Image (tube, rainbow, N blue to C red; front, side):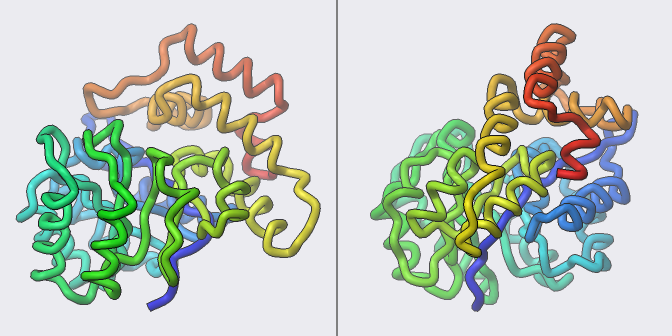
Length: 294
């Protein structure tokens, strides 16, 4: 088992005009992010509208994704509340050669650490040869992982529970577990996280900061002076003023209108919001061409 580390984008899902998943363009988008500098991409995370995409469409994409030249660079998000459906989707992924998963506890219901431990233990009982990145995002699922819960899950399942994506930011400065990956969910935490022993990041805005994030990451491990981190953080701050999915799709739709398609209740930025975002990016000299060549 190798530690999961590096720059990971929370991949975007590209939809057709009828709101069905465009499998080919979604995969091409993710492959391009890897070529721009990401070590990998999380497919069907929250940024990828995972909770809104039908299971049949997810399975169709996974079949095609298994043929990607970057097959080993993907984390598969489950994006499902149902334990049974989560296990079934993971089984299918395993049969296609994927074994690294990003799994969030179910949304809507209220529960505590012991129930979370039961949820993950049921997965491991059915699927042994897997590596799970816990997904800590209280804003979305209503539950916040505690240090104790993470430590207990790793103690019970050291070969299966291998890391955590911390988008709630209550753990990335605290968790110190040997051979366990801690990956904050924002570029703002990349450098400080690395200094505290984190393994990298998994973020939505790596869809536009792949190059910059990779440079900060590589410069850190090469002991070089950081010359890109401020610009990286400025880009993230600009997007943080808006819903990230809305902002990213609005940004990309300037180059390709297919990115305008979002599953309800998600939406693009309003005209005024879009203008504000683009003005803020212009102020820091960041646009579609510059991020590709960063």
